[in-house]
Image 1: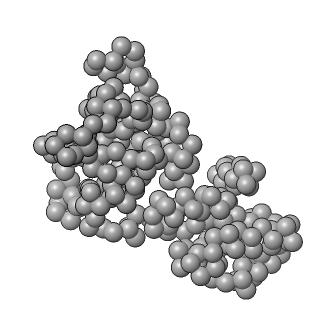
Image 2 (image 1 turned 180 degrees about the horizontal axis):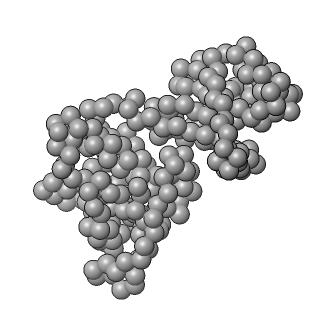
Image 3 (image 1 turned 180 degrees about the vertical axis):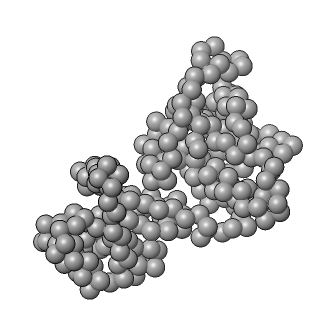
Length: 253
């Protein structure tokens, strides 16, 4: 599937260079897909086939992938797949795993009034503790932490728009590593350098900013998630209090 993705990227670059539009057509069923393929072959034009969550539930991701591949080979055309208005990060990842060349994540379809705790839990995380207006949470994998951070940022923006309070601040920092887990007063807590670095990184964040360490962005699932969302982190080297060496951190736009 890597070759398909590389070809799709090259096609998009060509549309910009040669100044032409790439047609995108919704696939409701096999008959519609056949019509798209025949039209593309007749016009000798590349096409983008789009399916939304409804079509995915009805046909299946792998079945859609197989149908498009079959017609692409049969008609000798450039035909790529876009998972349109994917309602969640999980659904987007499923599309990536199925080999879709393009992914459109639409968080407006997610639960709009979800709390921070609900968002964290939905991304296989858990709230460790709250400290004033700060929340410390842990996740199974770095990509789940990123997914939760993106969802919380979108939720905060919507809340600010609803209340006409664009000054609402949300600053997030993420680090990955081992730490010491202890149980105090019946509750689990975490200590160690990993926790310290995460706290320092969060302190670097500006409003609506997500700042992460190199360990987080080097995670394969994190890279896939960011690429699917069209998010390109910006790197910088910083000195963190209590940390001997400089640390590479990345801001996610």
